[in-house]
Image (cartoon, rainbow, N blue to C red):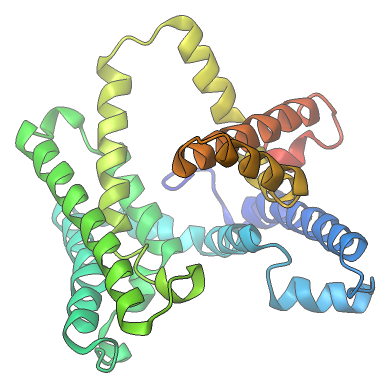
Length: 295
């Protein structure tokens, strides 16, 4: 999408944003109704729904739709920007992201346990937000001739990827020691610290494999089918995850003596499969197929 010539302001506001907004409203309403039905403490109210739709995420994963709408609003500016950035500019952007999103927060917390942090006005946060940083880097890597990516660049990327992931894990553990709490809200503040390195490494690796490795026809068909359903899988998985049956399956797998981490992987694959099949069914219905990303 980024870099396309036909992404005019008129098309964004008459085609893309209305479609995404409708998807947001429909799935937010669906999750809100489900919560009202399953939680006796919640009474359905259109006013309450409108307030929550405007101010909050009615389900934890729907933050992405809000972010994507914001990205579409900024798309004309991003298009103009990426077309005028040089190779050196994109590399500078990557360095800024690693420094301000990764290295500096790591040093801040490790040296002061969160008591001292850099002044927020120095952090150039506007250009390092998700709707600017990742589309720009994705545009750069997509248009980068992989023939110019040397072997040592792959090795360096994977080395940095392993180090960054290791640091994120260590900081999560270290924060749990400092705070005495190990939970998603309190301890996982560093899971996004070096994700820019993870994304770059996976992107250039997959791009290289796709262009140089012959994939069997059946595997290619499965990958393409899954790829076409990723948006629908994303929209549906939280609903299936909220059903009690998945907790029961996880408990039963664990009680059989199966490793707990392996049990979680099995349940995740099951969730993806059910969400995938649901999306495939919806893709066959003309009226609703657009809600899950099909034209």
